[in-house]
Image: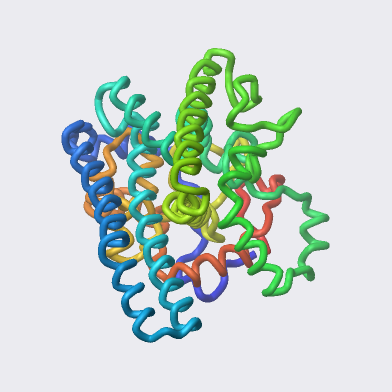
Length: 381
C-alpha cells in the first residue's frame, strides 16, 4: 500500500549494508558520546523543581483563588467548571513534569545518565519505582527492543500484526469506523502501558503469557531474574508509601495529587512510543533482511513543537539517533540529530512535524498489519 497523500515523503526503503554503525559513528565528534553525571543531575533537579513548584502553585495560589472566586459568585455550575479547569491544568502540567523525570530514568536504563553503572541503576531504580515502573525489568525488555528494532521475530514492543498475502487481500475492503478507531486509540492511551507491563500487549508471542513482574517470565534470562526481583521490591516500597499516604490524607487526595498525573505520564509514554514506531513510511524486516542500522533507522522523529520538545527532553524528536546510539546522553542527541544524523543518513532519516492529533489518527488508520513474506514489509491498512 502506498503512503497516504498527506505524507510528503515516500517509503523509506532499506538502508544499504555499507551503512554500518561504525561508519555513522566515525562522522560524529567523540565528545557527544560522553556522559556527564553532574549535567544529568541538573536536568533532574530541573524536573523535580518544576514538580514542586507546580504543587506549590496549586496548593497556595490556584486552589485558594478558585475558592475565593467561586464563593463570591456562588453558582454551582460555575464552581464545578472552575475546579474542573484548575485540576485538569494541574494534572496536565504535572504529567509533563513527571514524564520528564521518566525520560531521565529511561536514560539510566540505557547507561546514558552517568558513566557509572551503579549511579545509573541507583537513580533509575528510585525514579522509575516512584512512577510505578519496574526499573530493571523494563530496562531489560527495552534493551532487547533496541537490539532488534523492527525485526519481525525479535522486537519486543509495538510488534505489528502479521498476516499472509491471502489474508491481506481479503482485508483490503475492511476498515473500522472512525468511532471504533477513536475508541481503540483511547484504550491504547489509557491502559496500554499497564497492559504492556502486565500482559505484554503489543509484544512478541511466547509459549506462555509474559509480564514484567515475574522473574521467570519468558522476557528474561535466568541471569536477569535478580534484577526483576529488585524491581518488584522497589514497586512494593512505592505502593506501600502510597498506601500510607492514602491512610493519612485520604484516597481521594492520593488520586488527585498522584494518581491522575501518573495516568498522564502513561499517556505520554504510549503516545510517544507509538508514534515513533508506527508510520507507513518505515519498514519491518524478516530475519534475513534485518541488520542493526536498518532497524534503528526504521523509527520516526516527531516534532511536537518547542515547548513540548523541551519539556520531554527531546525524547520525541531525537529518537532515531537514540536508537543508533542509546548510550549517548539525551542532552546531546538533539544537536547530533540536527547537525550530523540528517546529513549522514540522508533519505533514510524519517521525521514528522505535523500536529500530534493528525499523526496519531493517520498512523492508527493506516498502520494496521504487515505481510512478513514480503521480507521488507510495510504497514498496510
